[in-house]
Amino acid sequence: MDDSTSDCQLNQGKVDFEFESNEVPEPLCVVDDQFVPKVIMTFNTLEDATKFYTDYAKAAGFSIRVRTTNKKGNKTKNQLITCSREGKWRSKISPTEKTNPTTGLNCLAQIYIHTLKDVSAWIISRVVLHHSHPYCPTQAEMLKQLRELSMSVHRTIENNEEAGIRPSKTYQSFVAAVGGHRELNFIEKNVRNYITREVRNVSEQEDAKEFGKNLLRMKEKNQNFF
Picture 1 (cartoon, rainbow, N blue to C red):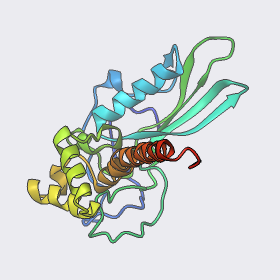
Picture 2: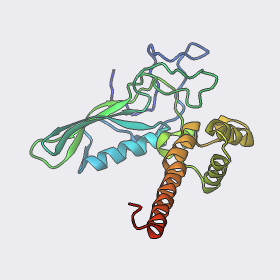
Picture 3: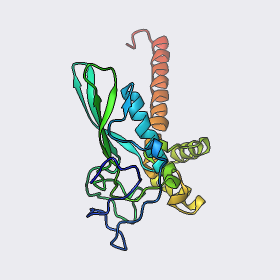
């Protein structure tokens, strides 16, 4: 098999992901050949190579992640970038409750890049374009790198958190408002992460400041307080 083929295709062999028809679906997109990664493509920097693959993935409709990076001293020598569906594991969440059901499909799509000896450049030495799952640019808004919560969503989350409404209930309210999971460009985990990283973090900081002010007031009233 020629890994450097220029078409966006799905693996026609055996895969771990089962579809209702028991067949691997047809490719959902074809990316212009000039934007498809190929063996021996060279780049001036690692960042340029990574951006090229990121742009290709966005155009094709899948997300990526850096799988391994090897260094010699402080200098990176090579890097493996894979489809984010690489890997295989079982989720404890019921399939009917999953908001991200395609995570971990043992996908082998990837590129391997490394430095050229005595030359300040990077080269692609391995490319696998075949995926073990369907992918499509029309669903790009659900890719991990592209999920974003709007300001109105932020306000709703903050208000619900202050009212003591559980994150799962908050997320389900968004789902009900638009008519289904697929109409949202974020998942429940994004709601929980926002609460943990932003809402509760700000609340804890404010509590700490207020606690400090109380200590100072007590100190003013009683010089022997601490």
